[in-house]
Amino acid sequence: MYKKVTGTKDILPEEILKWQKIEEISRNIFSLYNYKEIRTPLIEEAALFNRSLGQTSEIIQKQMFLFNPASTDSCALRPEGTASIVRSYIENNLDKTTGFAKLYYIGPMFRLERPQKGRLRQFHHIGTEAIGSTDPSLDVEIISLADNMLKEFSIDGYKIKINSLGCAKDKKELIDNLREELKTELNKLCPDCQVRFEANPLRILDCKNEACQKIVSELKAKKNCLCPECETHFSKVKEGLDALKIAYEINPYLARGLDYYTGTVFEITHEALGAQDALGAGGRYNNLVKELGGPDVGAVGFAFGVERLLLITELENRITASKNLIYLITLGLEAKKEGLKLLNNLREKGMASDTDYENKSLKASMRKANDLNARFVLIIGDDELKKDVVTLKDMVSGEQKEIKQENLIESLKIC
Ligand code: AMP
Image (cartoon, rainbow, N blue to C red):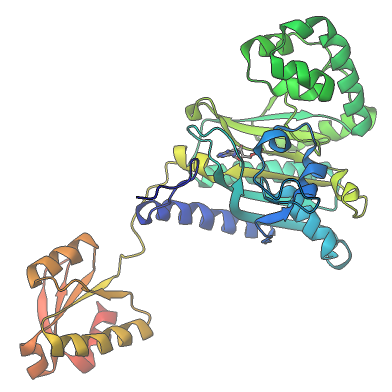
């Protein structure tokens, strides 16, 4: 027997209603905020991610699914959405046609991680990218959008943590300061962080190792690294969130693991998720569009992990799709032929309907109709054929009556 690939998941029909609900709520909210959907390929040139996410990021170091890794035109399964969307924005000249663009996406992402609860190799993002503005009120809109989505997903008890990394110059200063301060602690850091110290000390701020976290919590370097412009931007973001009464915490150690982030960064966590506690995350990436060959414009975005939303949402997996299902039971070959025409007719009229394809007995078919939550059952046997009628059973009231074929659709509509 074949098994699914490690770190992937089948989403079975019994779970799909929750997925559809999450997606439907998201699309409704995106449209309220005037974000438009974009769909980019699942594969991209690997170089796009190398350039955007940074050579020292965990994703590039060890989590990319690569095709032809040795070749210069190597491709990768996308590990995240931002780089692809910025690539598409530039390649399709959206900067010239649309200018400022508010985009959203829903789809699978791939990372070669060690699977555990809430951590998969194929998982799904619901995310946004607003490209073409450095206005701090756009940061506020993005965070409030995420906050509203969580409320609509029936999730509470989450925490919104924010920070500002500042502009490229501020970031460099912070990195220098971190190196300076961590120099004396180097041998107390975990082996990974000893490498990060050279490659990119910002990554040490995110390390989950207890000893590293303790050292990080005592750091002074994260103070006063913002230039006046970035400080003002961050103050406006905080004021905007206050005005909307969105609760947040400032976490000066929040760095996010990707190179493209500048300025505001945020993460939304939930204790109930355990070790992998991030529901979603995002921030500004003001240099990425230019770095990938586009105009010098600011941008901000975020993404939720759908699997993690589903672990804690209170949304019910309610069966709504088959609420009005009509289940047809035919007895005998002649009735089956007649039944196929009737099913076709019902579906043409927009009425959800199904029948038995397993040659079950009348009793077993009735049981099946019950299991499917059918609203009505139609029975056609020899008797019905002779009289040109259909037996209609209302599964809610239990009432059963014979109806002339030509009156059936009307009767079902009235019911
Ligand atoms: P990131 O792009 O890493 O900031 O991820 C954004 C969100 O996607 C996270 O907050 C998680 O909810 C989710 N996520 C990231 N990686 C995984 C994974 N390997 N498995 C499941 N969800 C993930």
